[in-house]
Image (cartoon, rainbow, N blue to C red):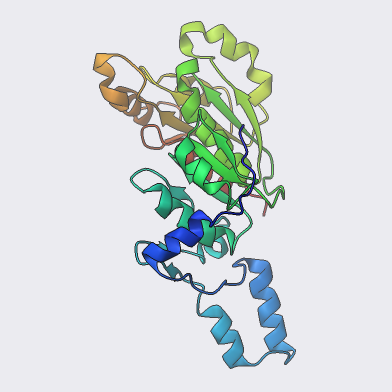
Length: 278
C-alpha cells in the first residue's frame, strides 16, 4: 500500500474550488450522538430553538453544483455516503470526499483508480487503496458494530476482486470478516474442509462466476443468511455473469438472497446491516 506525504503546494481541493466555487461551511458530524447532544442542549436551555434549527439546516445535503453530498445518510442508515468512482473525474471524487471527511469519520470510494488515490492522499494521508478491489477507504472510527462475524467466500481466485470489495465494505462498516477463498464446486472437498471457518458466521457472502452453484451449496450447510454475488467471470455462455445470476436466483436453498452481477459492495453493505448489533 502506497502513501504520499503532504505537500506545501496548493491542494487539489484548493484548485478545484476555482472550478466549482467556494466550499460550504463545515457542518457538524451527522450521527445519532451529535444529534442527541444538540437536543439535550435545547432541553437544558443552553441553545435556543432558532440556533438549533440553523445547525440542522445543512443535514439533508450539501450542494456542490455537480453533486449533492448526503451528510444525513449516516444518521439514516449508519454509514456515510459511499462514492461510486465510476464515471466521475478524479477532481469530482476528491471534492466529494473532502466534504464527506469534513463531516464524518469514515469514507469509502468504490470502482476507483490509483490516479484518484494519488490526488486524494494530500487530503487524507491515512487513505488506503486496494488495487484488487478498486476501492479507497479512510477509517478513523474503528468501533466494532457487528454482532458476529461476516464470512466472505469466493468460488475461485478470479472472483477475489469482487469478494475483496465485499470484505472491505464490511470491514469499513465495523465488522469482523473471515475470508475463505478458492473453494468452488469443482473441488468441493475444499469447502467442506473449511466449514468450521464459516459455520458460526452470522452472515455469509458467497461470490461465484461460471454457473454460480456455490451459494446453494453453502446455503444447504448453514442456518445463516447467504448473500450470493454473481460475477462476470466465465466463458461465452456465461453471458458476462447472467448465467450465474439466473442460477443463484433459482437456488433451492431458502436462505439465499442475490445481489447484482459483480456487486461486492452491495453484498458487504447489506451483510453489515444484517449483522449490526442492536
